[in-house]
Amino acid sequence: MFHFLQQEGGRVIYPFLTARPSLGAKEKRKDRSANKSLKDDKAEYLRQRKRLYADRARQMAAIKERIEQTRGLALVLESTGQSYLSGVALGSLLHFGLAITQAPIGSRFQSALAAVRLNAPPMGGNFAALSALTSLFEVTLFQIRGKSDIRSAMIAGLAAGGIMSIRTAPCRMSREMPSSVAVIPER
Image 1 (tube, rainbow, N blue to C red):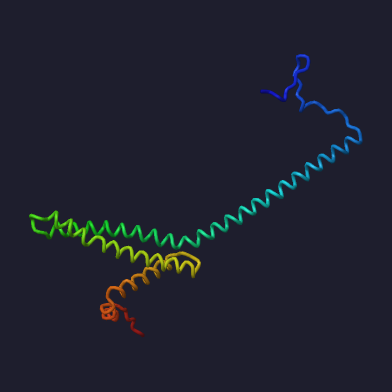
Image 2: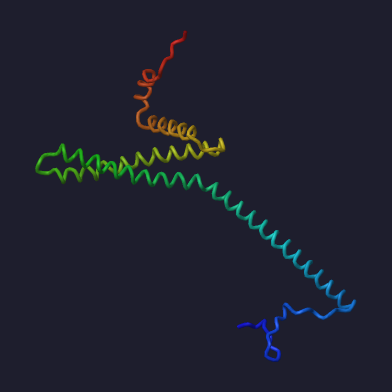
């Protein structure tokens, strides 16, 4: 267990504390050259270690860049899936409640389930489409502007809402547009 302890005649000698015998000039030169080679080895080890850390830092920077490039697509896909599930859940609750209250007394539950089956998936799809467009515009604005702030989110929501309204009712949008624009009188 104590391999560094030596016993001599019943007493313990600590080899690292004992004085070294005096060295001659030749041995001193050898000792210095050994110390110099140890210093050179240590310096070489530190240089290799520094190069290794620099290589690792470059690799991590490349990985982070690849993650940043794929982050946009992952964000769009993740928010689309979550929004679809949220839309289906909210559509189920909404259409189940409406059908329960409006169906005839004898077949309320069956009517509610039929309404959920028919109307919840399209509602989830609309939620998913709106969320996908919003995320897509937000990621695009992040790539263009280089920052993600509330202004980017507002512009993305505005653009997604505009595209969704064009998709669903272009005639109605063109009819209602002049009435919804605020006119500021000049003084």
